[in-house]
Image 1 (cartoon, rainbow, N blue to C red):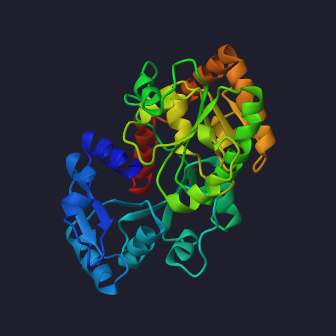
Image 2 (image 1 turned 60 degrees about the horizontal axis):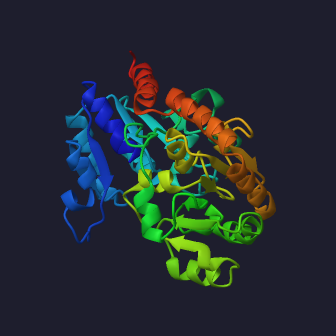
Image 3 (image 1 turned 90 degrees about the vertical axis):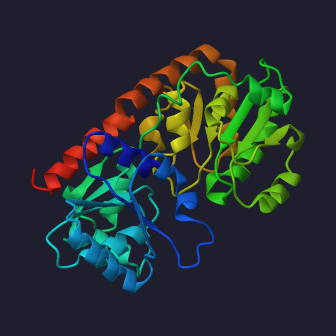
Length: 352
């Protein structure tokens, strides 16, 4: 979605934009179905099986007929594909997005490209990601920190969360602690479960909310033995995330590793919702402890519970911090701000 919104904004500004997607040889559905958001945005789309050498040659031939100035790769596979297709070509300039502090996988094209002089720039989504890239051997001067963006017309204050609370059967006064996150272990669901009884000891009316997709059976087994599990509501994948955030008294990010800057925090703060996060990767660049939210150590359910309870018990202070967070998001994470920064980078790499 970050790529789609960026492409749409660049096209709106008058640039010629083309989206290149990976598509295996046995995809069961149509291109229009699998990439409907791109087509809905009116963006030109081409598909390649980016794992096949023949497709690399086909893409190279297409680039020679369509002399773009910049190739901006948003995933490791796409980066390796673009690098192989453009070897020996003066243009287009090659840009790599990096959205995580995880190590670049060894023995991959991406690892080679990040260290190659062929790479025009690496775009890190947080200062923490830039630091991780430098440790990987990427030249400091070729890394640009440009934060991901949030749809501020969609994620904004004033949205009602009553429909979500009605759905799970609680009233407007009941404390609701939410964690929107994919059901993968690095997101800290185990710590969230361990936090629940500690919160209930101080706030016995509290309820808890999980939103996100993943291996539900594995996480159901994990939750089965949790104290307070009867207060935990699972909503799976949702398209009404603004209403989800609006329903929450506090939004929690309990991640343990591998983040860049968690999109949940950008979206929640864009709506001026109180947040609590672990001290992981770039999250403390947006959530400054005691200023725009609360920050706790990684894998510390006790500290997580204390921060949640403090947020629930100090609603005025929590609201003031969330509003400060919203102002930070508006200054650094809008589609327009991100596009301005990337447009300047594109122009520089394209020779003005």
